[in-house]
Length: 362
Image (tube, rainbow, N blue to C red; front, side, top):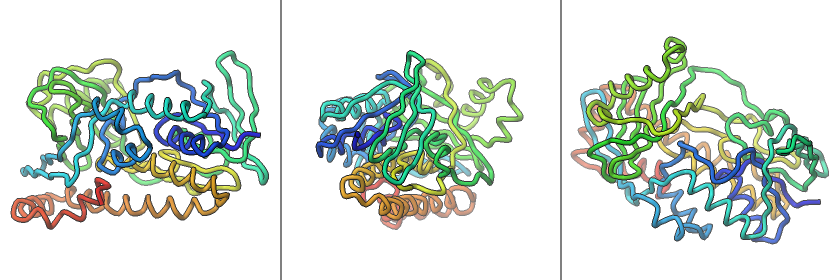
């Protein structure tokens, strides 16, 4: 019987497989996609994410392809604030990140198979995945543990009864890779208006990952013209910076942008990455949480303490959510935003602890 099965080959799945394989555990990864794959989300990597990549031994390979991100420019409510990061992050194509992490896991001894997970059972002695292979056949595989790293709409979570309750206002992200931009540098530009925002994360001097976040009600009101609506709204927020921008490839839609599973660990099943929790991407903590939760999952599987996973990962999630709530609170109110911008110009050190927490530099 295998030591572990991993559902999903994104940063969480590949990180857990890499660490388990390095400890000479037998592990197999299943993902429905063929790699390398194009993915236009999670292309900003915080300082904490960069640190973890070096700890995993892949930072040196990725560094030549990364663009340093030195901070964020916030625009909104009539103010502009520049927040410099204490340690630089990276802007990096997600396709490259995923491919390098998966390649490192395979080099360490993990196996990867293309297949769509269709069922998961969390038993007392072993966990089971049922996988639909490319030829249409079903494979039933048992292991000592399953890491569910199959995204915010995790089938593993659903089949094991780990899904949390849904409620509250829901928001969605629309966007992709854009070319034809001007004035891009080593900063991310964030344009905020009410509950909506547009984020421009430069990949090169003229290309960027552009994401627009809007409410579900706005999407419903523009159901028949989503592409035109996204283009108009993004340009309303970002103005001249997107005046000549054009999308390259398909538009992506992601959401809803807030999710946390009710249970993160069962008898033999652990949820990692977005399957465990998806925090609003405004603060850019998704890739960090994916790799950090995967790191903890591997440690718990190796030690045999699967039950300890729940509390350890929840502490990581709650620390990041507190920071995200503080940031959202500051930018949601015009008065608070203007006050914070003025304070930032006078003494940037006042915000240093919050910036360090958000970026993972602390």
